[in-house]
Image (cartoon, rainbow over all chains, first blue to last red; front, side):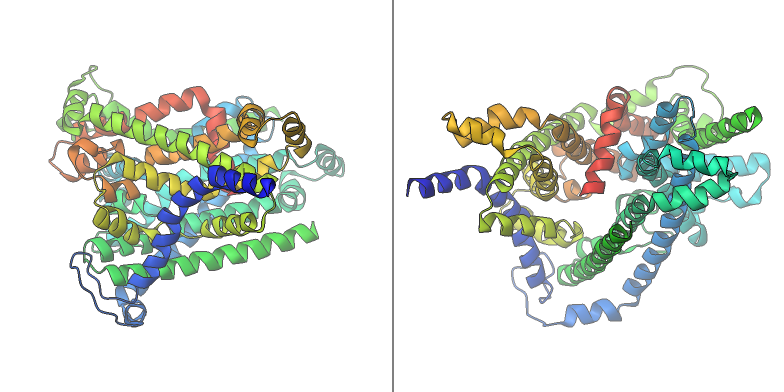
Length: 291
Length: 273
């Protein structure tokens, strides 16, 4: 009896406060959000109607949503490839007994401590003024017109900024993986006459497989949810050419005042991210067994 | 061999310059007038002209936004630490069924992107409860959103602290609260630094969630102030860039002193989460 009372006291003191906050901020909004997707609520009026699965139907019948989904795939895929290649390359160089490793690491990591909104604006100035003026001075036509006003190049601008930001981040994870590669294995390979490429291809890369898995999935989920840079660098423009999924949800809800539809789009995004996470867990489990 | 080494350094330094050049261009142009900037963004400023900073400070309401950002990030970080570490302690020490169930719920919820909660949160806190334009709303929501991740990391760390330690204290007549605050909490310092850096930096840079609740000039954070300043586009670019520098300065100074902890915190935070 005494023990049970004591347990309840501990539960109330230690568990309830955190759970109360979490339930009110995460659980209730999540359930309420599912409820909203079955209504035609506009966010302002008091009344709404139940419309069944109409919102979900509209999500997939809406061409602009499918378009933004495609753009997100393109953006995500390119950013994942480029930022991982660059991050891995820097990590490989930095783990080769380089002096001032810490200083380099700190420099490459800097973009990650600054919020996406401010980073986006910094690059806004770079693309709009610095690069164009570089184009004029050097006579390279490609740079003369701002990337951000050209529907074809605006996406490239987004990918550049994302790669620039994330590769420093991935570099840190790759360095941690590379440091753990046993030195005697590398030395043995050197004695056998392996050059730098063979050492990377046959020893280092296979031994940092788990870091690669982490980095790839981290970049996929991050790029699928990207919002801040999308807003401050291109604001979805020019002519909606860079409107990606997170930004699209925001627009649907808060510019077009279609809360039910916006929430249904958010649920679709949630399902995509959940599927990616499930794949990640299975892939990394399988890797562990083999290793 | 030596040639190869200097070639490596050359590549590294070139790469680093490309990485850092946006910040360099940003800073040198804040000392110029807008005309000088548009004419040639690469030229060095003629003098350290601080007019742009003065104008940015005035238009961004810098001191107010700075204060708001500081209040929000410090409160979110501290309160998150208290609530999450306490619940994680009981999760790690008591294998009650309800604990297992609650912990599983928290872990599963980490998968969901913020966009799923965004609209309902605005409706509930902004609409029904009328809590818009209050810093406390952003702090409360911020804590709620970061709890799963912090609990996950704290619990993992606590599992590695031997149970015999608290059992000894309990036998000596210490209550569970006392054991936690006097004995366990001090041992959690390394993981706390990691979590606090991650939560603190995240909340300092937060834009989307904050922008949904804080719209008045008096309640703006630095991110929102920078955003509003830059969207009301006049053609006056130099003060805008000074505004951006003001926005990143506090965090850069912080970074210079604690770079090791910050890099570790940011990276470990999301790798384990």
